[in-house]
Length: 214
Image 1 (tube, helix red, strand yellow):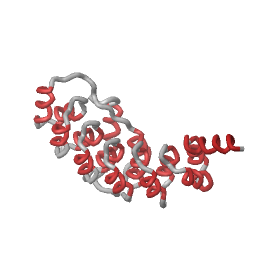
Image 2 (tube, rainbow, N blue to C red):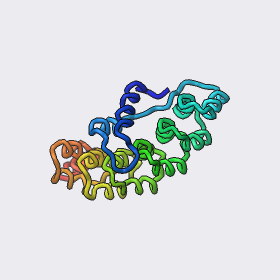
Image 3 (spheres, rainbow, N blue to C red):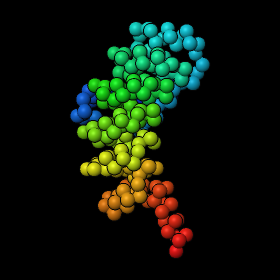
């Protein structure tokens, strides 16, 4: 199954009680921040394809989750699982490395907040979809996009506009953040965010280049 499943189960309970189902939500801040940091990794246990297919075609939630969280799940299997009624399964599909890009785009519009957030974090989510998610009204969706290593400088600049601190912190850490944005962050924001921007390789490289030319 998925790594740190016990901890994830507890987080899911919190999220379930909070009633996530729209862009606006009332999830506790600590649960949201944990969800943002969460990294689900597929189960690498070798399972025969026939068994995975049987799990995927089952009507049982746990069986479907077994298929959706296994590294051997095929793109076609994940595509079918993405329309499953169970949120836990769609969440797993949204984070799976084998999920097709068109499926990730569909999941980015999922009614459940936590599914959309995981789609925003998936490194295979296409740029057009990330750009759309960058315009989401929820700051945690924005922060998830900013934490995606494939977010482009253009996307990060869109996110920077009227960004909340949690989004700015992710922008400050990102390897694709332009130097002029890092300089703005360092001049304008609180010490924690400034510290992240100061450690950014792009910012450090600029000072190294300046010293070498002096």
